[in-house]
Length: 444
Ligand SMILES: C[S@@+](CC[C@H](N)C(=O)[O-])C[C@H]1O[C@@H](n2cnc3c(N)ncnc32)[C@H](O)[C@@H]1O
Image (cartoon, rainbow, N blue to C red):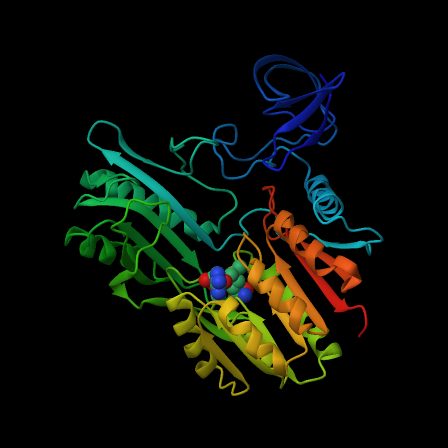
């Protein structure tokens, strides 16, 4: 069987006559012997028996648990080719889902670092007397944790802290289960590190406040790692797939870490969103700043889904008035502190849902920035944009399928056209890609 493509999860796609077969472990260019195991609708799934001819793009994955872990699925592929595959997937989505034609060429920006680029990890943990501690990411399509000692995509310091935490939990015989909301159980370990200041935050997530034992663990960790300035216990008493709860108790130091981003000072908390690949994110924000500067005519920009102000503040530092809209409580509060810490007066933040505020705000602004979560823009937000017709839009997206769906609506009847498309590889070794598109009203 010859593999000619990858699906969005990184699974090899082969074709036998008119039958499509998915084979885990194959990459484009591989020729292999496989056994078909089951059929779902018109699609077949097969297991890899033997590689007959290896693809020229094959590389030895550095991660020991690569075959089991669901964290990154492209590690066995040459980096340049990873980027090509991801750009092709964006293009396919723009054409197939977005029905877009005459597209401008994609400007592709690779990551300057392809390992140890992530500033954050959220790691489920299971521990009991029989098995000891098992902590790592889930096996693809399952709830089974694959035990790891090291994750090659997170910062080195975070790996060292992780190993130390694991051994402390093991030595103390503590109980942990990501699904347990029982008292005394740890659910997840969260690790964050600021790239420019080096500050580290450790988060322990549990269903109930953790006992005194964790206060002494916090002291032990802070002694071992002077970079740790914040250790917190976030309480998630609900058994849902939402990792974080509302309450956070500080066990050591501060509730946040300081980071420098686009030459501005930011505080980052345990559950506030922050871009994971900071060097590449800065490049994307620089482009947005340049585009705003070149095109805004009202001197007022709306930054929808503004988080802690990661885009609003660098744009307002150009002397342009910015209004950010953010729903998450902590992110909104931190955006106000970040504004004050950088003495930027031409920015305002609104706490609430974008779909409830955008219509009024767009009356006085001709430039809109959107950086929504993976699900993209809601129908109401798209309707508002179509009604208010801001002249220019920057759309930053981590999901090319929802981006393409939204562009189909915005570009319908030639209302908007795509001025330029950029991709940034924020997530090397994974199938994820960040896209930034600039749109303008056709009549502008
Ligand atoms: C992809 S993040 C972008 C944050 C920020 N632009 C940045 O670069 O760090 C999306 C943000 O949108 C917020 N959010 C999600 N749904 C929202 C909504 N309906 N209204 C307002 N904010 C929302 C999330 O809390 C999150 O902070």
